Length: 493
Length: 127
Image 1 (cartoon, each protein chain N blue to C red):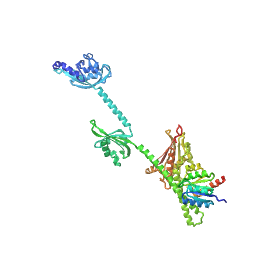
Image 2: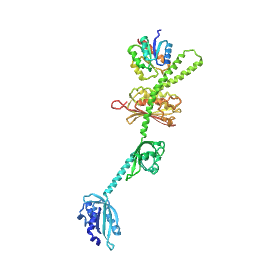
Image 3: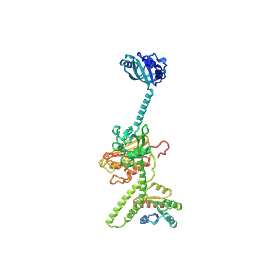
Image 4: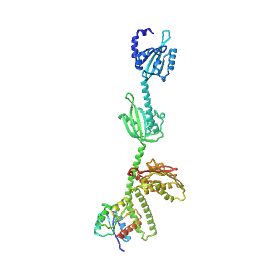
């Protein structure tokens, strides 16, 4: 041994004992010549259990050691042969059989004549560090899974310059951008320009001033589609607490908006209904006077010219009368008479009427796909027949050159009886679709524009829903859902 | 032929005069007034075979007048007429208050007259 070490043996021992790492001195047979106190405290072995023994036999008793003993042996032999240090990791077993992961540094000790006398091994316990890393990785993995599972939220981070620095999984699904295509781009491209009050700059300004900012706004997808969202923006602070950007969380509220729009439409229709009733009453009185006066004149001897004119007036008055009749029908508040109703039977009742349609020369086929044993609904069979008749007449009229009407009934998730009436007709342009159930809206030259709004009212009174999907040139499909009778009591309708 | 005497109640002068003329043409005698109060006064003074009563009146409503007539003149047939047309709620209420018939002004005039005549005939047969 080196003379200097011998002289300062005690100081050295103290130093070695107080080092926070395992320190072993091995002879050239890998037998332990010296171990420090940390070795004892970490492994649970006493000085006497280790010194004089082969270190591999003591610390790598387990057959399943991460690095097998012979591999370790090879590492050490190589180090000795090449007189070079080596770093490696190995799992040791302490006295109680617990595994600990140690990061080892092996340094060969050479004599003055360059002969390898033995090795110094320094072992750093990295069990906890590794566990922490592992659990962090786990958490990251789980977060990733959770985030990728979220579809109606988009999460992205914008730096102080307004550039996107993080684009979470939900963002790709909602906004259509791939992470690599949008990262570091100006976040303006995600924000609608329509709404100047909630443009990106003012959002960032508010989030900077208030720490957190929430607003209802619109985001724009890669394809230019506008999505209504609730946007929550939080400050993103770096570890020192300095503002480094903003975290954007956007919740897609398309569905909610749709519902709100439907409610709004229904309310508007109801208001229009009331208005129509009042209006019809006001028209009926003067109209009655006009028609009544014409009736009185009927017995008079008048010139042909005057008679012709009166006839014309009478016909036009009659036209108004019929229109007002439709308005009254639309607005009537009559409560439907609800009875247990079989939907297939109700549809069947309408079909004979449809056969005597106005187009004797036009070939229109009717295909029935009726699901058997659909539970009954509570409904007014008369009114529902009116709805089906109306829809079927519409389907007929949309196919002046013939076509196919497909009527499908089914049990929708045990909740609703679903009736679909599909035609291969002219279809309805998209810009007309949202008005299709509005009173007085008609795409037909001689339509009153009340048929579908009456249908809408009837179905609404049945607590049901009616929807239309249509494509110009391909045809239209009306879908009606009527709730089944609930089992407990019958308070559902 | 006995001419039946009809009391017409409608708040619109043009409708009153029209009904007057139409009924006279059909051989009825008639008297018209503009509101419920006047109608109840007239009923006290004169005898009528039937009342043709508008539902929407200024002042007390036609249904209210109907109730009053029912209370004081058990057998006098009252026929309701209204611009609201065939309204099931109104029909139900009118029936509940004891009207004899119900006519919508939205029907063709010839049909209104026929229906009215049938109601009066039936009412008289029942007496």
